[in-house]
Image (cartoon, rainbow, N blue to C red; front, side, top):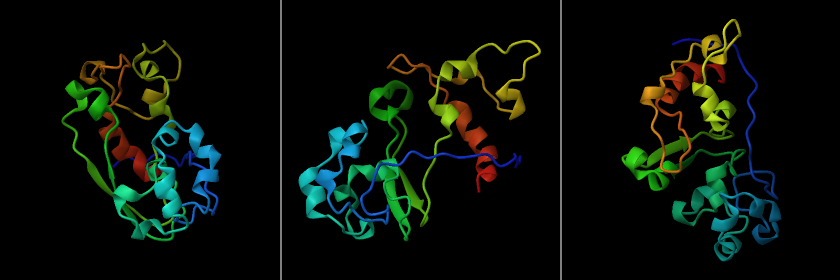
Length: 176
């Protein structure tokens, strides 16, 4: 496995009124910060979260957990948490991603899953032509990107996905 120098890692986490301790918020309805996040606000179930207020996530059935769990709302939990992740493109781009199955993830205590920031920003730049005599992050990190392998999604956004599994194997060791 290739080893890279350690890099700074930033994680976006939703606000929690009880120090991200692995529980549902004390006052979930009063947590207005969650309403601003598109993956939480529209999906939030105030009645269910209020009924489970301050309960530990590890005793709540997965289907009854707050939607903030998918956005790292548990990242300081003092226990392991098992959850199921569904790839977001399964429904929006079924021709290219419909075959992706749900993935069961065991999240160790005091941890969070992360997506490299560069993967979330401007995928077109990943495939843009390299400039002569100019350093390029693809060369710097020896990333193998082949535009022919990358699908066009139904949303019209260019995806950079195929190379991620190969590249993740080499970068994951740099963040541990």
